[in-house]
Length: 369
Image (cartoon, rainbow, N blue to C red; front, side, top):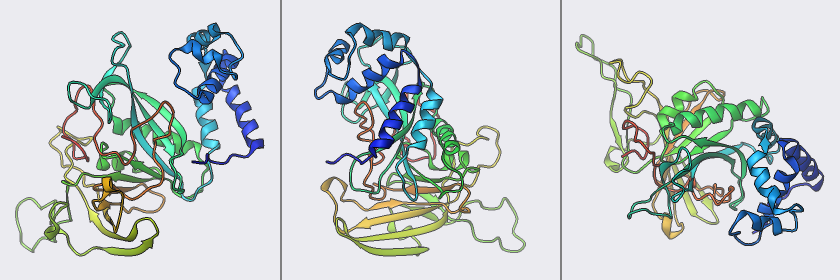
């Protein structure tokens, strides 16, 4: 698979700016990063990295760089955001990757998280550290991504709130006046909560939903002279029951060389019943968060994803946040977070919710249990 192209002149300037973000033990940290990138085989211990040709220092500098090195995180984030490959529109994937630390019982702030390939006592839950990544996806059919941000998650952190904070920070680093960027989330995120948290920023939100979700239309107007509390939810839209699907608001049929006939149906103005919201416990009314549900069905696809794909996008003004909700599988996308650093295996198209050390209250978001 060919690596993404990057102009050599720009590569030299990027390396110089990257070196400038290391404020202590800069040379040792920089060569340690080069050794990690250039290593052809897994290394059994840190001193083995010093044997790489790009690491010109002794093995002791590796430990000194990790123990005493310092990186200007904000400067590094500014550098990554300013070096993104051109795309219109920008599409970013937000997902959580777990670093297994099963045997490191003294490691601080370990938590229990979902892991797709490593199990403990027959369950896909391991002890380790969790990092929430934001990476730019490509419209090319490859798995390369451009990481722009990563944040360590405390076991008690809320992934939706942390994701909203990271998205706001990234939007502040992107050039103003460009197309509204898209942010793609897996089924472990709460679509309505993300829409509320990002309501005032220029961002579009795409969230994959599980196949058992239900949404609701607005209620019909009240008849004159009616008494009692007004209805807040109208007709039920059950993903698993096609008889509850009304006529789509819009339909698109096109041909693709890989997936054959692709049919996209959209239903606008739908909302879920919110269980988690800022006024939870106050006995106040639950917020109504409207969005657009999309269903993407392809003629042929890989065996693991032969089911129809459905997604939804919510439609405020172009400069306001819009939400896109999907069920199951989501739209076909060439990019994922598979090739992000340290072997990330959590992808936007993976289908399980993120585990947490202490489960929060049940949410109306996708993937809760």
